[in-house]
Length: 266
Image 1 (spheres, rainbow, N blue to C red):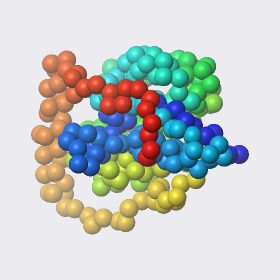
Image 2 (cartoon, rainbow, N blue to C red):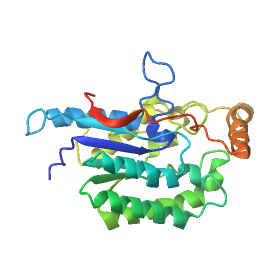
Image 3 (tube, helix red, strand yellow):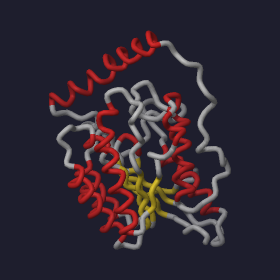
Image 4 (cartoon, helix red, strand yellow):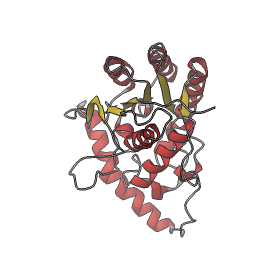
């Protein structure tokens, strides 16, 4: 079966969908990210489709630091007003980091949001968390992330939605695809996730090797690993904790980078 030819794509979420840390060339503090890259693939596919050369539009409402209540609430409201035929909604990661997060309640919130989007006839694209089993400190959230992943697959089956399987994407277990903060992907990581999403929607990616792991890296000593972990905790974990204590978010002064559906060439 041929995939649906999408023409209006709206991306919802947090820093992952905003595109941190996949810098936009020749621009300061601007990011590309997997959703922009997916939009490029979809735009090219639309131009090559049976209907000739339809205009492809794209909006990205994602903002770093956002919790699921905002993503499944205000962002969904704003997305519905844009009348998309495809919506990606990826959130909950910031909630899962909080030890008292109610995963079942998060899933219920996401389920309701997906139902609202699907009721319009739009296709919905979800994504599982990445398996954090190899991540210092973050591996403590593995149980919560696994439960949330199971919920996402159930939600997708219930609403006939698509799922980017990041949990099973072995290549993402390589730290070379992650930026120094160990939370956001590099440009190569975002590129691979975009291709994963593109194939999840039923298209054929020109690069069939997106899921293949990188060549094996040279091992590092325990001393070097300890030193790197200490530097990471000092430079990234500490500031995150300070923001939490002050009740602040990295996205407090940030607005969506593409708030309306506008033509996107890719």
